[in-house]
Structures are given as structure tokens and as C-alpha cells.
Image 1 (cartoon, rainbow, N blue to C red):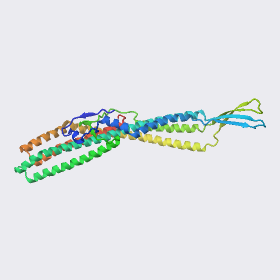
Image 2 (image 1 turned 120 degrees about the vertical axis):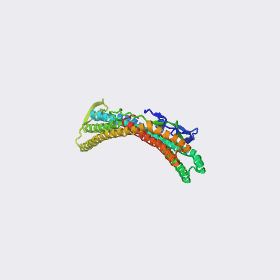
Image 3 (image 1 turned 180 degrees about the horizontal axis):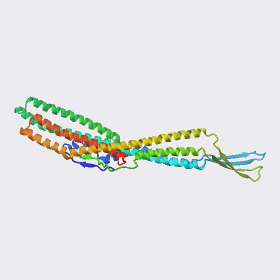
Image 4 (image 1 turned 60 degrees about the vertical axis):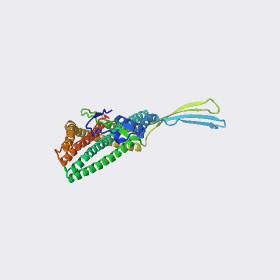
Length: 401
């Protein structure tokens, strides 16, 4: 389970979610763990995946699937005019190694189904977290857009007063109105993106209720570069697929072995005491061209699976190295924002308003300062979203979800 680090950034980013969500009694409040819990409870594909594992386990019994026992009963004038009886019981079975290797194949196939289920669950969990992060990011961006719009609306009266007093010209007033219109459009765009992300998350959770975050804290997933899984699930699955192909070859080879039959009979002749006896038979595979062809096909499939495993191992190593490099860069970016840029953005926001009210800067300078402040905050949110998405992918690769 990933432990989430919640962090406080700026007041603009911490704008109350309740103002956006309009919570009602049926609203579901979500955090990372709650989202995953609901997704796992409601997803039918996960349930089907577990059922497939159960099916493969039950198939182990089929390894000892003997042909039906034949029982024959004859009664009547078999040898003379006197009614006699003849009872025979016969059972066919394969060479013992056939059942042993079929059991081995069934066992490894069952293990393959289990690994597929585990990988499917981890992939599903990664998808849920990715969608949740996207939704949370959309909330944060809308919060920031709301805050920026509120900030400009707050200074609208001040700008009008300065225009009426002649402190700023008509062009500056028009620019202020134009900027306000742009911010309103930006707010609408961010709201539409939030609705899109929310619907995507609801689809994944299989719910229709309104949803909202439990709190308004920006969160950052933990990233530990030193963690390495020597046998990741993705590669373990590929190795298991190769092992299953090997078991198939051995099972096919065993079927070329002789088959056996054993029988017992009990017969009466002219109402005399019954005669008994035993029968033993051997089935020799004189015509095994079809089995030989099937064995060749199985060997070719094994070779293909082996090549695929080598390809996946190389791709995995390269992808893991690439993700580590990407995350290292994103960590540096976030470090810059959290240690310097966000504080600078807050300082710019505070001093710009005071300087403009005092007449120390003109409107263009004020507009540029405010735009820079919110641009820094928005770039931080974008970098944080990229980091969280990359961390999910990295943790998926190392089986740390």
C-alpha cells in the first residue's frame, strides 16, 4: 500500500472543495484508500479474474481423468439352449507418466492464472490511482482558477475608482475587463475538465453518486529510488508462461507412450460353476504422426515464448531506468517550487496589491506580477501531477502498489 504524503502549499491551492462540490447527503468523500476500496468492491472484471483462478485450480482434478469403466452383461442362450450369463468389466488407462505430467501442467497453468490475476489487480489499482490523481489535479486547477478570478474581481472596484479619478487611462481599464473575461473563460474550461475527470473516475468506480475529496490538501506520492524488485510480477508472469509451454511439451511427449487396459470376466456354461479370468492389453502408438506434428508446434511456441521473455526483460530494464531518470528530474523540479518558487509567488501576490494600491506600480506592472504569481502556482500543480503519474507507473513496475 502506498503511503500518501499530504502537503500544504498556498492558500489559493487550498481553496475549500466544499464550495465546488456542493456536498449533499449522498456525496461520497474520497481519498486514495477509499477510492481503491470502492473500485475493488464494485469492479466485475476483478471478480471474474478471481473466478478464472478458481477454475484453473479445479482443473487439476482433470489430470486423472480416466476413461469410463466398461461393464458388459450377457444373458441367454450363449453356449447352448440353456441360459447362461457373461459378465465383463474393463478399464483403460494411460501410461502413469501421462497423468503425472498432466498434473504438472495443470499446476503450472493454475499458477499462471494466479499471476495473471495478481498483475491484473495491480494494473487495475494503478489505473484507479492514475484516474484519481487526474481528478484531484483537475480540482486543484479549478481551485486555483477560482482564486485567481476572485483576486481580480476584488481589485475591479479599485481599478474603476482609479479610472474615475484619472489615475489610470481607458486602455488600462479595458485591459482589466479583458483579463477578467479571460479568467472567467479559464474557470469554465477548468470546470469542464473537472467534470470530464469526475465522470471518468465514476465509471471506474461504478458509481453515480456525487463525489468530492475528503480534504483540500495537495498530496505527493512517495518515491524511493533505492527500491528494486529482483523478480517483478511482469517478468515472473512471462517466465511462468515459458514454464507452462515447457510442461505442454513434456505432456505431449508422454502421450506417445503405450496405453494399457485391464479386464475381468465371469462366465457360466450350461449352468455349471462360473468361470473367471483376467484380461490385460497394451495400446501401442504405431501411427503417431499427428502427435509428432503437435509436438513440433509446441516446441515452436516454446521458442516464441522464450524470445518474448528475453524481449520483455530488456524492455523492463530500459523502462525502469527511463522512469528513474524522469522521476529524478521531476523531484528536482518540485524541490525548486517547494523551496523557492511557491514562496516567491506568494510574496509577489502580496506586494503587487500593496504597491498598486499605493501607486508605486502601474496597472501593466500589476497585471504582469499577478499573472506571474498564478502562473508559478499552476506550473507547480502541473509538475506535481506529472510526478504523481510517473510515481504510479514506477511503483507499478516494481510491484510497490
